[in-house]
Length: 120
Image 1: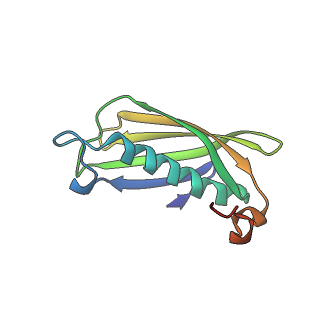
Image 2 (image 1 turned 90 degrees about the horizontal axis):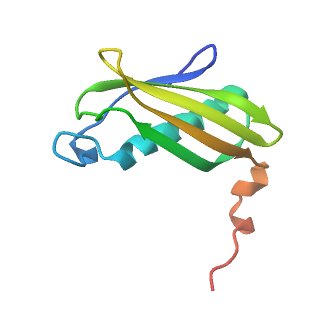
């Protein structure tokens, strides 16, 4: 992961462990890559936040063993709500997909185990 002037960037190559259809990356693995990228974007803005929603647009098949450049940034901030935007590009400069997400800024106490309700 590399910090850029506007957000973060990462080059990722999916392996056979993320295969869905033959030779193609499972859509859930692509969504996970976008969500992870958004998590690192939060370091750029210095906020602790959690995913509220994420929408992924698949514009072309993500192929196994091919490098993809993922770029993300915060598009808008409204109080505790962060709207993030990302794109993924193949090695030929073609956009393979994009994602939009809403994150909610939380207090560090959100992550403490003692605040998790006990299961019944």
